[in-house]
Length: 200
Image 1 (tube, rainbow, N blue to C red):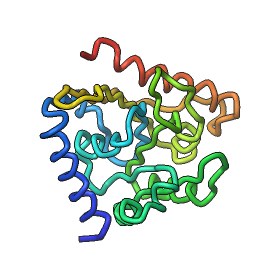
Image 2: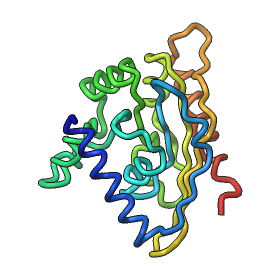
Image 3: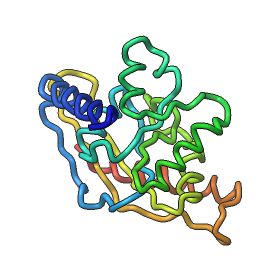
C-alpha cells in the first residue's frame, strides 16, 4: 500500500476518534451525488479540522487529494503526515504554478481534488471565493462537487456535511475568460451556501 493510502487511513481513524469525543452526531447527506472519476470538491471553510471531517464524510480514501496552504507542510510533525498523505501545498498570495500543475495532474488522472475556495476560515459568514477552483475544473474538463459543512465549536455538538449535485462550469467558448471565472465562482459559492439553508 502506498504511503499516501496508509496516511489517509490514519487520518480517517483520527477523524473517527475526534467524532466520538467532539462531534458524536455527524449527519452526512447527498453522498449519492459523488460522481465517478475526477471532480473538484469545493466546500465552505470553518475550521482547521475541516479536511479531516471531509475525509471521514466523503469516504473516498486515497482517491482524492487536498490542496492546503504550504505553511502547514512546514510544521515539524503535521507537515510530514500531510506530505505522506499527498496534500498539495499552495503558496499563499501568489500564483503557485507547481501546485496548479500537480492539481491538474490529479484531476487528469481521474482523482478527486478537495479545496476551499474562500482561501481561509470564514468565521463570520461567507467570504468571496477565489477563482482557482473554477479554473481547475474548466481546464480539466470535470465537474464541481459542492459541499457544505456546519458545526459548532463546543464538545458534543452535532455536525452536518451536505453534498450537493455536481455541476459543470458554464462558458461561451470552452476556455473561461477572467469575467467567466469570476461569475462562475460567485455562482459556485452561492450554490455551496444554499446547501446549508435549513441545516440544523
